[in-house]
Length: 280
Image (tube, rainbow, N blue to C red; front, side, top):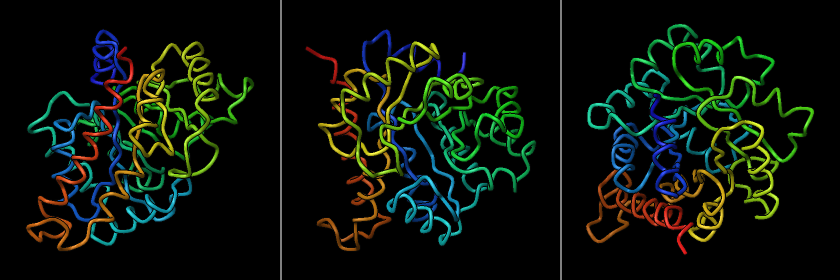
């Protein structure tokens, strides 16, 4: 059984939703993002989305676009992102890791080489924003054959005519984008999102995660009441970006323990909200 499936089965038995944080690999630098990555499970992360920096992230809002740019300026590459996963796996063999990004870096790396290296590094799933179902032969099918889940996005505009194609070959879970737009824009209306989650669960038989625009503890708790997982990305990225040199009593810089702990503290608040969202 894969790590993603195993995680959702354990969470279902416990009667709670999963918390899935997103961070950009290499933001603001390799060492800081690796330190945060290693500590996220201890802050309550059940599954981790690790962003792959790209120069033209069309589905991302300003916060994640800026994070990708900072990562690229610090020298982050897809190869270094896989090195981060390997480093993480030396101390954590159970927390699923999903790479989220765009097709160009994977294509440039070489699909066969990437799938081999990703599997060997310990990657469990892929979310590739700009590869539609019509292009499944490019990366989706080879990844599935290697045991890497290919997680598809569904949106408020995914109608009944499109849903079968979107869900075909989807593995791990379905990622429901709560609003039509870019990341960080704002969460969708609760009732509309809940109806969409129920529809996707019936159609796919898979867990459904809700993301895009979830920024507060209250929002996370509300969506965790009915979704199988809650994804929070822009809010964590913004938290890290907001921390300047001399933040904190000890005056450490954005790469120091004080600011890393500030990000992890925020993640812990969100995870507590998600994990307690179904308690009476």
